Image (cartoon, rainbow, N blue to C red; front, top):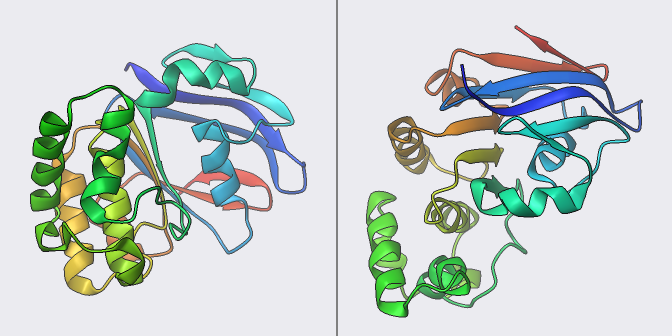
Length: 213
């Protein structure tokens, strides 16, 4: 199987993560569970290239990552949704924020708007198009942040507690969308039914170690 991500004996402040090895296959979806403070978010940030491991290394598409600068060539291939999206947004309105990354990449505004409206329709939040993001609920902000991630069509998607602050209807939208996407995906979540609706491959992070359950 072609692999999207490999972790090779990754450690971080050994009391948090110790000798973590993990393989994420092409278009495979896996979930990571664990108690609060167990290091799940830190592990995602290491995979996303925001934190360097103190020991071991990460491979992206079989390319060994020697330092954080090496992640730059894969930056457009990795989509990361943080647990708290409060400070995630760069523009005032929904539509401006969703097209921001496409515009920064050089796409014409008209083309970026077409793509943005398409993803807003898929997530059933087209009615929020012109809303000011800071006026939205926490759940609405989470879905807008996901729209901004998905519009870039990353090959690897990293989701940290994506259903936090979502009501049941919004969670169902996310489940349906993520199930329709053929991407390599790592989902950190406490929500058992959400995980079970997406994947049967689950790892538990406990006592600094990662084990498949």
